[in-house]
Length: 332
Ligand SMILES: NC(=O)c1ccc[n+]([C@@H]2O[C@H](COP(=O)([O-])OP(=O)(O)OC[C@H]3O[C@@H](n4cnc5c(N)ncnc54)[C@H](O)[C@@H]3O)[C@@H](O)[C@H]2O)c1
Ligand SMILES: O=C(O)C[C@H](O)C(=O)O
Image (cartoon, rainbow, N blue to C red; front, side, top):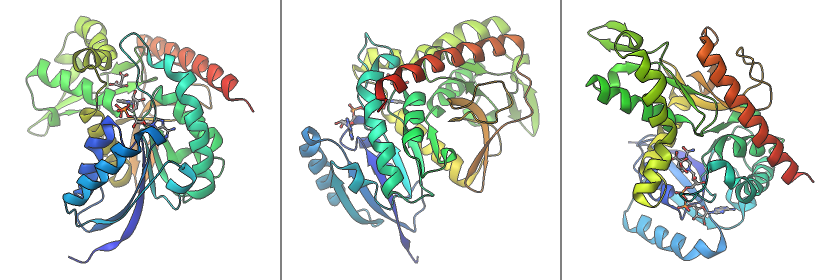
């Protein structure tokens, strides 16, 4: 097979938990194809350098034929140079007594610098997936400081929330997850998020059955929402560390949708400008999106019910507050 010219994939937090799962899967060609060679730019901070060096030794020992070059650095201005893709994992996770919002003080300055670095040295077409928490506001901070990069190129990972809700539905209905379509989350990657089933359906033998006919309303608005809202915390309590394999998996799902397109709605945390759901501009908000030719669009034709509108408002208020805190903290 002829190999394509290398693309540059920059990954921050490369010595961390999520990266350890994500990088291997990228190196197998799962995301960009078995003929796409890769320049991997791995970025972390000074104390993590020995771990990063160990990771690179392991990557070497895995003999991935797609790797053209690996660079490791603690300098984002070096690490993001000419990046086609940037996956921003580098941030501190919460402990079991914290909410994701409690991480703003420690994590949002990281995304200010990385936004500036992306703006200066990455390709203008770079696709950026922000993962570090609180992810919506960190993505907004990145977009604010990445002045040369279109805001549409910067997305927050809310796909894990959607994936979790699909998994719960699959178990409830005892149906394969691939038959459940058009389920997505609105708002913040936090305990306020809201899973919307009103457009969801089960696809079997070309027949679409609305999910609202298959699961009772009380479960949908009660237990189901709570499980999804608290899932990250539950994993953290059991593992003593936050989700990593499922987070890496969701990053891949998000990028596959963005690059190769979608047939149904998927959750993406995107810039709220010009949305039809009365979410104020200049927030990164999880919307139902469709993707085509490497671009995403917010689904325009949905009619959220009164409960959903109330939950959208709750998420808006929370994100306005996060934005206020972050921008105040970072002001020059
Ligand atoms: N959005 C989501 O769905 C989702 C899911 C899981 C985890 N997360 C978040 O992702 C982040 C990473 O999680 P993890 O489990 O990999 O954490 P981790 O602590 O295992 O790894 C984070 C890595 O980031 C590095 N880092 C810290 N500051 C950095 C900087 N300025 N530049 C580059 N690297 C830096 C650390 O040294 C560490 O190696 C956390 O904030 C976590 O809360 C988000
Ligand atoms: O919950 C966390 O702190 C990590 C991550 O955001 C998750 O949802 O698993």
